[in-house]
Length: 380
Image (cartoon, rainbow, N blue to C red; front, side, top):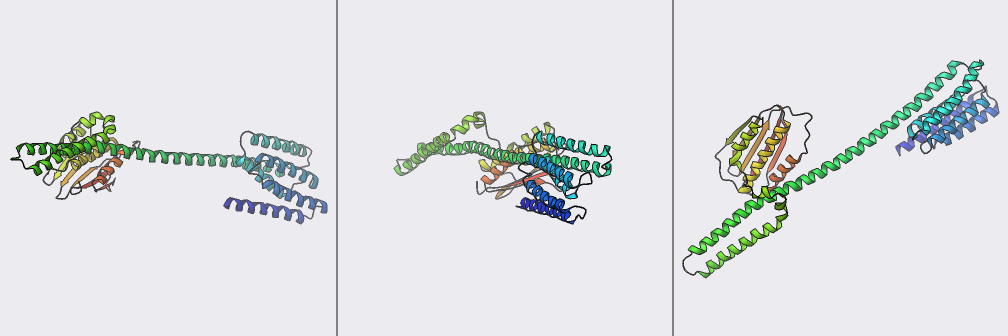
């Protein structure tokens, strides 16, 4: 709507300028004034279609102005309105034209005009100061239109690339969430399956050492054993596909915060100095919370190793009555050309959200990066 309004204002301004110049020129005869008004109206109508047919409009305006100047002004300096019409047509030709046709049309008509004016200059019928600047302005308008057209194409291309990159980023984020949830599911399966299996074994043991018949107790123990076995089998069936895609991970022992010393030692060997501090008395955590806490620290140190650059890192584990808090920070400047997928942070948020915890990550005021996570114990 705004573009249409600007176009309408431009055409109205051109029409007003052309008609005012034609009617106000006392050197013209009445018939030449009528010719100027008619030429102005026709030129404005033609220019209204410059977006749809820029080549045809430029040719029509150039021919119209040439005939108008020749019939009404002869070899005298033409009307300023005609110069404006041709200037707008040349700019629109460069802006909206496609392929080689605009360049061919511009070169051909400017060449014809130069031949005519060259003859006039050679015969002394025209002055160079009245002719040469016009061609410079026309060429400038044409080149400016081409430059603006290329800029619009570049802006459109960059916009499409940005949209495509945003779609790809969202897709990668969804894939990362799905992948991390699958990994969490595999790990939770191991944890829960182990606990339920222990319950089954304990129920079997209790049934063996139970004195007397006590049918109700034996029936309850048998139900616990049967339900536990059924629960384990059902989990294995539901998560079979996930475990099949990563059997080695599923069969490997799951790490815990008790193994942070080994993790920190490995990161140090990889080149990142790490300081580990444990605040409070370490307590036995629920297996899922323990595993998630270890994975969060592991992922944070991996990110620091990859992206922090020359730096030192610090890991703080705080044991509280109702939660365990983790803090991983580094003082590195970051690697400017580091490219990451952002999957690590997505995975950590998924783990924290699973237990109703909180996670904060971002740049530190004093430089570097810091991550803080809190995992409640009561929600495990």
